[in-house]
Length: 588
Image 1 (spheres, rainbow, N blue to C red):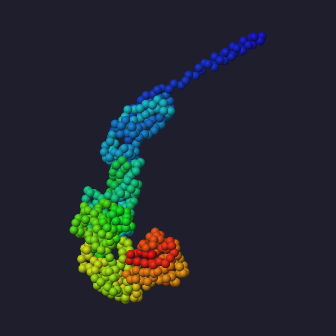
Image 2 (image 1 turned 45 degrees about the horizontal axis):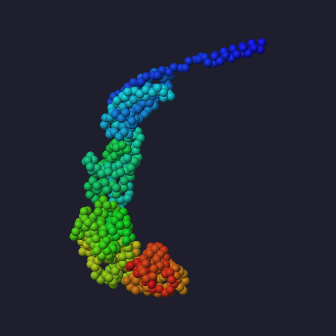
Image 3 (image 1 turned 135 degrees about the vertical axis):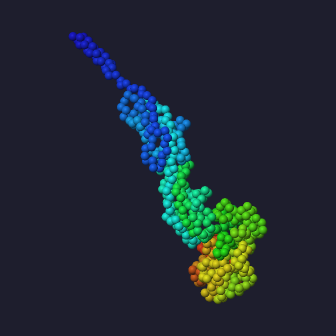
């Protein structure tokens, strides 16, 4: 009985084994499918900006007849310019549908990103790749060719004001604001804008162009900028002319579109023309870097109406053999050099001075002439000993050149009027590079100076005064005037004198011609400065030598703030000489 049980158990297990190995249901069968055939709704398309959001081309194709739900079929639609075998194709993915449409904007975007020119018919290839949803059984259709033209999609330009009257005094004020709509709507790359302008009626035959940048849609133009556009197009300063403006839009691939033109009536003015003097002397004299227009000293403009934008001048120290040129901008685009006999030319050589010294360099830009002579300034008039005779000024009433376009001098003044002059004769009314200049003002200390014009008023009271002729700002040449009856040495470096107490500090002795002296017992490694009065607030001098402790060697000084002047490294009795015209102090 036990054996029969084992036998039947074996038969049952075998039956179950063979039943488990039987293929009950067959695997599903998937048809391989077939290549689709694509068809375009048009063979030529020329969309316009009005078509940007409209469907202008539809691509359809036959079914690949895969053995699955057609709603799961996957299609990749590719577009490329003909002949490139879709190496740079633009793709669209479609699921379950056998068509796709393109708007005018989409086609335009494709053409512009490929760099095709506006309005130029271009053949594009379209093809469809079909597959199951899992990308199996891929079939690629034959290309369908469609000729498409990129449309012009320019900006629309408007101006807040179309009549502008400019003036030198208001040159920095906004004259008009230009605004424009975006060009190439739908284009995905960067669009760079520039402003073109030309004389009205010339249809932009030879326009000037002002770069504006990428994605900029507005530009505020100052009176100066509008005036420049007028001058560029031949509208003389002080006259009226009409200028046309338009926006030029450029894609990253080089397609260009132009906006409508806006016409502006401009009442122009004569602008400021500036001159600079780059050369070999700059580094050694503290006037920037050699041969660098960007930081070269600027010429002062003669402000007389007949000399405006014609005559320029500069007072400057130049070392022996210094060379330079004259530029109308802080670059080398144009540079005027020596053309012989005092003439200037854009092709001229370097202008040279043989000997070291203080020079007045003058330029007559209208006649392209230059003049170089001794650079000096002095006091003339009824208030000083020279009286109104320029020939008496130098050297007894001369000022000293403290820096480029900066003079300082001391003189005894009475109650009369006076001026400053840079020559030993009056100007004879000529407007030339060689003419003399006198300077006056109808205001007190701190007032602007005029060339060959007003006398200066008498000082508050007779006495010795320090006068500063300051042309460091070429837009405002002015003068300062301070009492100069005394000069004190103050600080914590004087033996037997209370530290930093002006009222008890020792007074220097005036030697004449702007020079002061005193002999003092000084402490070692301490500080002093010079004060022109018995209390703080008076005119004073500080160190400009970088902290020098040199003995017997002149050190540079300045009056507009700085470190204290250092006493020598060793204590002892020293003679101090303060030379205001040369802006030095010597301790020995």
